Structures are given as C-alpha cells and as structure tokens.
Image 1 (cartoon, rainbow, N blue to C red):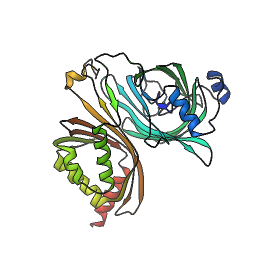
Image 2 (cartoon, rainbow, N blue to C red):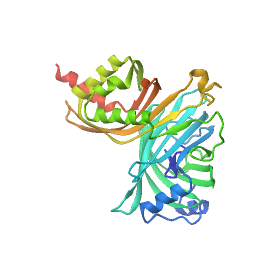
Image 3 (tube, rainbow, N blue to C red):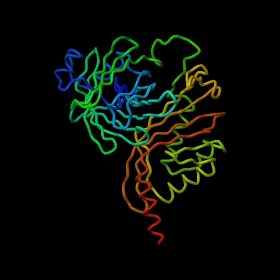
Image 4 (tube, rainbow, N blue to C red):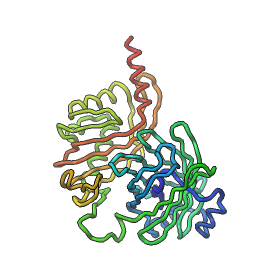
Amino acid sequence: MKHNIITSIGLLAGAFILAQSNAIAQDEIPNLKTPSSWNQYLNSVVESGDLGTWRASGVTKDLWVGIPAGIRYVSNDTTDISHDKKKLLIAHEIISEDGKMLSIGSGFVGWDPAAKRIYSFYSGYDGGKPFWGPRELVGFSSKGEVWKYTETSRGDTYETRMVYKRTSKNSRENIVKRTDGTGDIQQARLNKVIGGNVPDTDERSILRTKDEISKKVIKYFDSASDGDLKYAESFFGNDVEVMINKIKVNGKKAYIERLTKIQKVLFKDMKFIDLHVHTNYFSDEALASNGKTIGDLRPKTIWSNAWAELQAVGRITKKKVTFPIHCDFRWENGKAVEMLAYYDPAAMNEEIAALEESKK
C-alpha cells in the first residue's frame, strides 16, 4: 500500500522511515550501500524475490495528508520489470473494509547513467486527490532497502523515509515515518500473494502482464496516442459503464463521443508515456468487501489495471500538459464492460473553459 508500496524491491507510494538520519537507517538495515550499476541493483531485487504482488492489512495512521487515520484497510502492492528491463514498475492500491478506494498509484525506478544513481518517481490519488513526488534510494543490502520520498499532496509538501526489511522469502516489514517527527509511525507486515510459494488453494487469484487481455489494453492506449478511435469501437461493450473521477458516462456511443471531443476538439499530440498494464483474474473465493467474496458479486471476474503519464497539447490554449492517469477495465466476453478512470481534471477543465470563451 502506499505505506507499503513495493518499490524496487520496493515499494512505496509514499515512503517511509525510521530514521531522521542515514545513521539510524543504517542501524535498522546493516551494511547499506549504493549501487554502482543498474544491473547490480536489478539483480538484488530479482534474487531477493521482490517481484510480484504483496498484501498487507491494518489500520491507517496519521501519516499521509490524503488518507484519514483510523480506517481498517487491505493493500496490494506490485513490483514488475518493464519489457526492456530498464525500469521497475511499481503500483499500489489501498481499499477500506467497506470497499472504498483510499489510495491508488504507480511509479517507476530507473537508472541515471550520467549521475550513476537510481532515480524514481511516484504519483497517484489519495481520496480522489492527486499526490506525487520524487524518491531517492538511500541504500540497499541483502537485508532490505532505505528510501527517502518527498510527497506533495493537497498543497502540502513533506519528506518521509521508509525502512523496507526482507524478513523472509515471502514476507516483508515496512516502517514509515515523516522525517520532521510529525505524524504517526506506520508499520506493516506484507505477505507475498503472487509470484512466491503461495499455497495452491481455490482462493488464489492470478495477475498477468503478457496475456491477451493486457495486450488489448495496451493496444487501446496505443491507438488513442495515434488519434485512432476505431479500436475503441471493438474494445468496449455497447452498454459499458464509465466512471471518470465522479463523472458517469453510460454506453459506448456516449463515451466515444466524449473521446472524440477530447482528441479532436480539446487536445492534440496525445501520448501515453511509461504505460504499465496488468490483468487480475480473480478467484471466486477471493474476498471482496463486507464479508462477501468475488463470486458473490459475479462469477469469473477479470479486471485490468493501467497506469501511464498523459502528455498532450491544448488546441485552444496551446499549452503542453502532463499528468498521471490510472484506468481500470472490467471484462466480460472479451469486451470492456466497465471502466474507471482517475486523473487530475485541471488541464482539461482549463481547455474547456478556453473553448467556451473562444465561442463568445
């Protein structure tokens, strides 16, 4: 979860700490060092078994600006390798016991060859409001990692640290705290649910990145980047239900009309950068919310999750815009029948206002 986000090994949406200095972090994880190359760091992540999906549960603390304290939650954190093996792709979601999305986000970990150091960035939404920030690897060893993360959320910017401990092959411990001493300490124990030695039971769900459905989602974003809306006709079901932040759009026809306005009237040169897609094939026995299982809601549930950075140029304002976007797609009979999209609407609202002003 954000408090546990797997970052390279790692995790994290937010970040963490324990220490107010590298020395304290050193005490938590001995023999910390900085990587001399990308391959050295990547090998450490892979060999330590950090890739996969990790799950935690607990009660939120007074730590993150956008997440209220005192809410029971379940979190899922995923770390994967990009196709070119030059980046780690990290993502999280935090869901309350009553099924509300408390936090969702994604980011990357890469290598700066000029500076010869790890660089990273993370962004997402807490309670429907965006957060973002750079992350810095303080050090790593076979026992874990220490990161510094500076988050901006709801007009507030603050620094955190995370101590991420490898406690066993399929378990981890995270300790997160603000470096200025304010707020609560967030401690969480994570267990590997995908990618490790998980018991072979009917409750196990599957996450895939190279399956046909994930490829369809990638093609959908690629076609949107090319300005081609024809693929959307075959991608969505006729009665697709779309929720964009808090805006509801019913049916494929209405949604494609919205896409047409965005691409042909409001923006040009649209590109989706650093796109990551994975698809969850949920077991009917997997727990959903309110004590119900996925099978209680609907059988054979499949959801795809996608994260990217959208770049475009406003047709009216001529401004270049960049903002993170997250989309979820639920599938039935090879069609997307439900879509959820989350992003900061400020740039789009500005372009709409400029368009209306130009008509006067």
